[in-house]
Image (tube, rainbow, N blue to C red; front, side):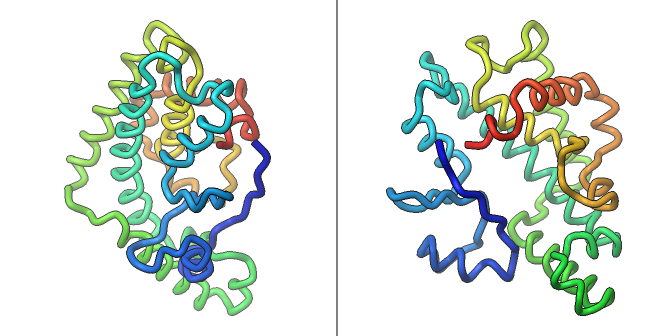
Length: 223
């Protein structure tokens, strides 16, 4: 599917995106797909639309496609727990806050840029209210990763039919455990993504993620 990619700038890009999606209330979130059939504002809806346009790509299996939705829910649980940790670690590290600010805004000077980064991180944190403690979030992550480990025990894809959107979901989510080298972030931001305990306990899943990135490069994984 041909598409044009545009980077979204949190806070500053909110109003233009609202105008294009005509979503005037609630929190804005990306990715967003703007198509001739309207705006799709959820990753799951984007994947379903892509599947409808090109079912031969195999994003969803022909038999029991609802199984992908199970992994979508699992990825969301892992991502929510991980994003809370990411925001907290970023907020505590001025260097990570500075890295998060787009280059043009760094022209205001280091101190203002850090405060801009802090506001952006705080704004992002409002989308993920912390309703659990650290131990509970860690336990949630382990449950999801254990499910992955069990599913991949006898094969190299989460579904027996082969590579699908389920693999894209979980390979992406694992970047919040140990970010892939291709992730375009600074060293302090990379450290904020990294979860040493989980990365050590589930190193075989990180190796699986690396194989996914190698076999299905980014262009072929973009939906």
